[in-house]
Image 1 (cartoon, rainbow, N blue to C red):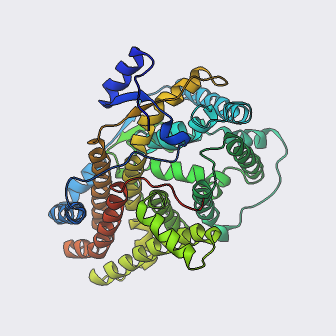
Image 2 (cartoon, one colour):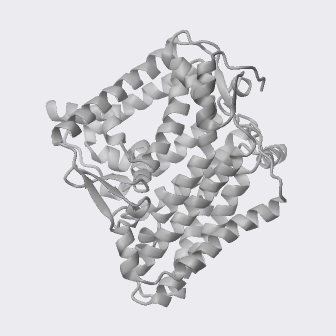
Image 3 (spheres, rainbow, N blue to C red):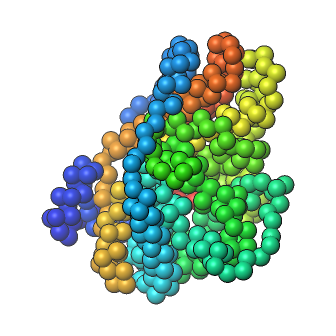
Length: 464
C-alpha cells in the first residue's frame, strides 16, 4: 500500500479524531476491496490463544456463581419504552424506505455506468463498505432497522394493491431456504469478483431484486421471515441490539444481548442451522483469507481436487462441523444435567446465545475494514459518476487489539445468555451449571478459532 498525505486537512482532522490513525491516498489494497492490513502478534500465538480461550472459560466459572434467579431475571427483563409518536414513527419508516430505494437505484445505475475501478465505484463501496460492513454493525450495536429500510419490501405494498396469487408456503421447508441462501451468498462472494467488478455486482443485485420482489409478491411477508437470507441475518443480529420493536410497533430499550433469551427466536431445526450458519460464514470468510488456508488450498489442488470444488466443499464441511459440535454439546449437556428435556428444545433455547459470538466476530472482522475505506465511500457519495482518487485510513498496529477485544466480548455475552437460559430451563442450580459444561467447551473452541483468524495476516484466497 502506498502512503501519501490526505488531499485536504479537514478530512485528516475528522478521520484522525475518530480513529487516532494516519490517513493517506492509497491504491486501497492494490485496487481491491478484498484485502486487509497485515497483523502481527507481540506474544507467542499459543499463549495468545490459550489466554483468549481461558478468558471465556474463567468467565463461565465466575458466571456460575451468579445463582440468584431473581437477579438474572431482573437484568434480562429491564425494558423501557420510547415514547415516539405514531406519526413520527410512520414518517421515519417512509423516509427509511425512500433511502433504501434510492440506494438500490444508485447501486444498479452507478454499478453499470460508473467507474470500473472498484475503489471509485459507488455501487461497490455502498454494498461492501457501507451496507455489509457498516450497516450490518448497526443492526446488533443499535437495532434492526432493515424492515423499514429494505427496498424490496415494496413487493408487500404491491401485494396489497394488486391481485395476489394464492400460494401457501410449505411448512416443511421451514427456514432451510434461508440457510442455503446464506451459504450460497457467502460462497459467491468468496469465489467471484463481486468486490472488484462493479458491472457483475450490479447484475447480481438486479437478479436478486427480481427474485426477491417476485417471491415476496407471491408469498407475502413469509418470504422475509423464512426465505430471504438477508432479512433473516439482520433479524437475528437485531436480537443482540439494545433497541427493539414491540408487538404493537413501539420502540423500546433493553440491556444489549438480553433479547437473545426470547424462547420464540429459534423455532425449529432449520432456525438452529441458520444461527450456526451465520456464525460459520463469517468465520469462513476470514479463514479463506489467511496464509495457512492458501497453503492448504494449494496442497489439496496439487493432489487433484478441482479448484471449483474446493471452496464449496470447505464451506459445507465447516458448516457441518460447527453444527455437529453444537448438537454434540447439547446432548452432552443434557446428560450432564441429568435432564429429561427434549434435546431439540434445548438446542432451540441455547442456539440464540451463539448470535452474540457471531456479532462479536463480525465487528472484529469488519470494523477496521469499514474505517479504512470510509473516506473512499464518502468521496464516491459526493461524486457518484466521477469521484476523485480513492482515500483510505491507515490503521495503527494496536488496532488489532480492538478487534480481538470484540471477539472476547461477544463470547462473554454468549456465556451470560446461555447461563440465563439454563436457569430458566432447569429448576436445580447444579443442573443449570452442568448443562453448560459441554457448550462452554464448544464456545472456547469457537473463541480460539476466531482469535486465530483475526490474528493472521491477510493472504488473497488462491484459485478465485
